[in-house]
Length: 151
Image (tube, rainbow, N blue to C red; front, side):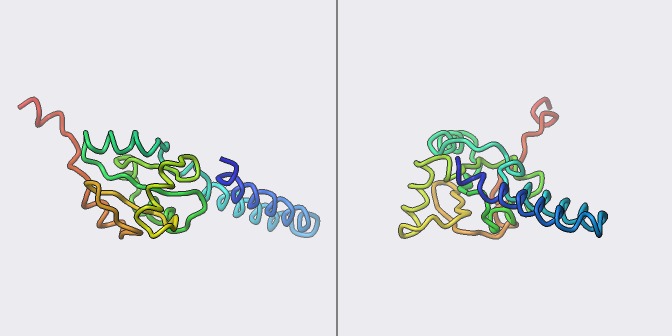
């Protein structure tokens, strides 16, 4: 848990320090710098990712609904890229933060020769390391359409 907050906290502290040093001479520039660092902190925090669940729960849910399981960690630029490119579809996957879930970290190490390489996406229990976002989107089951179910 502590590691997940280190990078965003560092961005906030550095941004505050730099903005504080430049505020007297360039208040507008200081505000822009602070905004940039706040955005960086937000992008590297757990806030932009769907709520994480445990690895075992993610596997159980995936077996029931066929959705892929994404193992990720805060601060990973490849995980952020995947999340950003999936946009609204990101909520249709099961996300496991390997820094919060030791079983998730172990699952990733087991398929990556002991490395915690993320994002690792499991589709039908087959691992795919750092897959293209378009491919991940293509692996999502079709959304349930209640109108079709009533016909």
